[in-house]
Length: 253
Ligand code: PEP
Image (cartoon, rainbow, N blue to C red; front, side, top):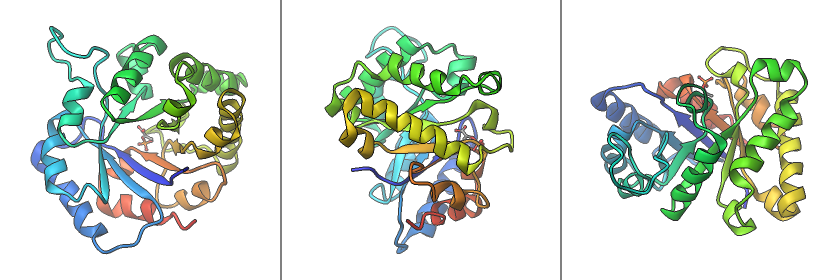
């Protein structure tokens, strides 16, 4: 079934003590609250085990922000999907535009990461989205279709059912520019149609598609009110509980 999810992406922010304090504060704030969405926090590798041990992971899912494209072995500095899973994390963000742009992650590499994540029972939060020039050239639909096809369409329908997608227009990430709720709905509906053509209506209907890109307490409600927007992947505003909570609470459907 399709879920509503609000997921934070802390990126390379917070030391371990700072991150632990932030996770514990969120945990305390959510205690006893009835929510209309699942809450996930994507945190640096160094924080995963400590945070997973310190919070109620039935209430807040813990996510890595990446994993290696190799299972194990002589890959100095890499962190495998199995290692991530062994910390208590249940999710992994894959294909974030910062990884694609700065670390040259190709569709092929991401395909392998998705497979390794799923083989280790991690739910991939798979990011797609166009850059500004592609949007201005009217190519955003074909760009996201290609990103999905190249890294995910080798999956069976059953496997695809475990994927969470995050549409993140690169021009909106960390820029303060948000896609309008209409722009988000238009492309989310398009993505769902692409999924339906490949896997059928049920799989497409059940897929959770998050919006990411300068989502905050002021615009979340309008974005989440759209029928094809199932939540958000939140960067900057996930780094403070008083900014993250209004986004979580924006979910009233
Ligand atoms: C992100 O990096 O996934 C993101 C959406 O960042 P921000 O919310 O800061 O734009």
